[in-house]
Image (cartoon, rainbow, N blue to C red):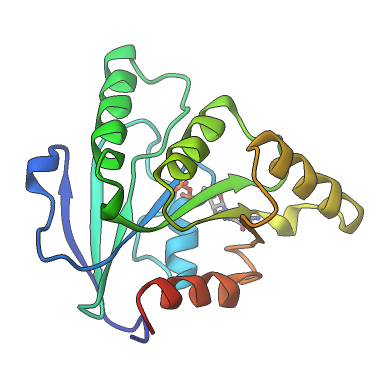
Length: 195
Ligand code: GDP
């Protein structure tokens, strides 16, 4: 597995259509605009693979990318965009609950938060989805390049505390823009894929 062959597979709103070939599923989630597409692009070393700057809050879909025919990157719908109609928010909640109701489905959960801010209530909910599955997960604190050096440690501590991460949980300081943290994240991905 070298992350060189990446193809967009499908976008689904209905979990009955999930791929059933048993390849590991590596999920990416985070609030709208946190840089989820940019993180995926950075991991794949591509510029415009997962779309960047999409209109936030459009209909909830799960995007599947097949990577080297060895794994799926699962792009879960962004959340927390204020202007989303209630019905759409409910759809999001239902889709996430269904997706995470089969814990074995998730080989690695990657939750992306904004390194600059205290995680939102939705981030806390998302982190608890991961922690409750008991499956491997990592938190990526993106946009690190926007922090002053002196802000990094206190911000990471606040993220850990707000998401109630235990000491064993991995929190990766990351910048999709600069590439900071990419190697560490790729190592986690390879590890769960048995590489
Ligand atoms: P998504 O909605 O979560 O998929 O977020 P996008 O990947 O579309 O990114 C949202 C905005 O944040 C874009 O303008 C990106 O260029 C910017 N962005 C993403 N990651 C970083 C980062 O690490 N540093 C900086 N400075 N900007 C970033």
